[in-house]
Length: 263
Length: 250
Image (cartoon, rainbow over all chains, first blue to last red):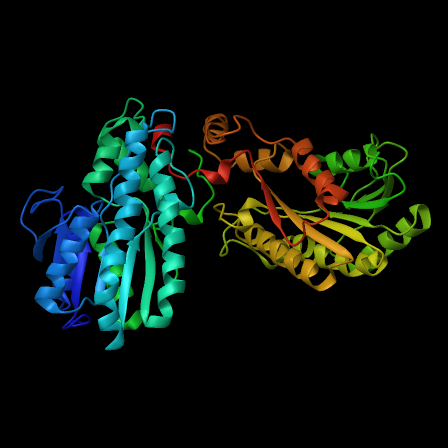
């Protein structure tokens, strides 16, 4: 199947990051015109990527307004907004400074709020012509906690609640709002987590840790950015026309199980 | 003695969690009847009633109800604790496994609710023992996991259909150190290492004790929980609040 987003205009925040660029690529394959909004042209991955680049710091209202003004000028409407920009801080609350806390909320929660708020007038134009949708990035960490990720878990819980609230408020206008809740996905963020204090790596290497992580998943692997992009694609497409207000966990079955003891 | 004058029935109260519930309710002043498929345990205090009965059989449950009423008066507290566990996947499970697990864990709870609710027209409290495994799967426990999800569902139905007279709640225990939990650890290649690892996954820093569940039961049947009904309360030392994947433990 192809052309599932033919003729659609989509903006992906964090569009140069690990998952964001996979979404841009997937959308482009399906015929969308993609705008990759990020802090820099290369983002956290550091090479070329599909989609027109739009500079956007999602924590800045002025930049959110400017980005949407650019979309309005270029395309006159917006069909799909994906709020994929996000950061992670690997700390307990005691280790988290107020500055850390404000920074992660500014990106993960305020960023979702600002991009959505200023995209709404453009999404409304598309909704009137058939449908528009927002896909937010929650996390399985919004349901159950990974140790040493306190503020991150809290931001994702906030995104989950905001997703439901936005779906209630804007569903009557024809704007669907969903969140995808990834588990472990192979991204620069995950590699940083593996390498950092968050892993608590006890004598093993990153490779042994990665294998152990795979083994805990019922599907015996962790996710790829393309796995995430495939769900975002479905949520953004007409096939998901009745899907709204939901939190879609995509974690290889990780959270379906009770904690798995080593045997 | 907040349960003085009340009659309570606890199924499967011979040992483990059920026994702790029997002692907690008795300690709070209730007259307690319990039951099991075997003989009366020698160490069961004399004041506690015992009926040898299989909860999977409606006629046994009726006998339990009649004996309770004759000895202690109508029960207004029912704790459905009796349950069995078979450690198998779906394809490994036999028809006999199905009959055993579904009979005790599902049909048993249905049988007792059906038998005792009519006697609770003037008010009553039911507490069912569910499990965290009713929400998330333990491997190779297919019928057990499914049977506990049934318990959670029936809990909500009883609360909705038979309120306001009857309050009905469930408790989802995590790892409680009983013979049943020991059997689960025995499945591990290295039971001691498995136990140490499992312990590290509990924010409370220990496994549960039967008394932990008995304490929750006592609260749920008490007037302090008078506005609590239809709920499944997790008592697991924080186990399910954490991700199943904790790289720090590898």
